[in-house]
Length: 260
Image (cartoon, rainbow, N blue to C red; front, side, top):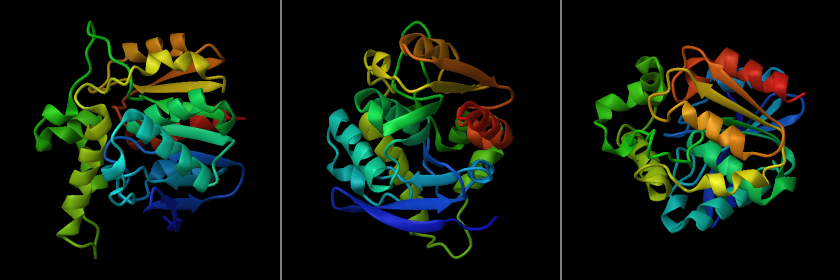
């Protein structure tokens, strides 16, 4: 795979990495739990027909320690809006997965002019005590890959230290990503997002991995029912929570076909 162009933008005094690759209409991607320490095949599939822009959320790989100054849910949502503006994504199509999906939905709800069309891959933010989500922060590290992807090796490969990387800094960066997610979503991922979902006016595609062991599939229907605009839902066979990692071709095709 050709490497993407890498730049940075400033959010609250911290440098956030921004990847860019491809040609065509701009589409943004906010990554899921654990962030993206490396470019993945899913993004290449999107880049075949779209200009893909991938800004890193604060505290996640490429996001330095930007999470350290975010003390509330509002802080996180405002930081995401700044990130979208600075990365040149205002008014573009936006995709968010997992943790990133929650923030993509928040921005689409509160600032509808910022998002043209929206795709949400198993977003955090809602919780049903009758069908509870799994707490990722209560799991042993060895169990996390199987919780994130249907094929644990897919997540393990994502998190492998690349050749030439600092062997001391790498695990610290990966642990920081879990800490960043915990600052806003611990313990159950519930930000009461359902209260703001009715404000979303952008056409929305909801994607859910058939084998998601983290967030129940019933949450897809809960989210779809709450959004008052045009909504479509797709269940991705054989995929786990981070469906874009398990099934990059299927997820990218569903998004591209929806956003035409």
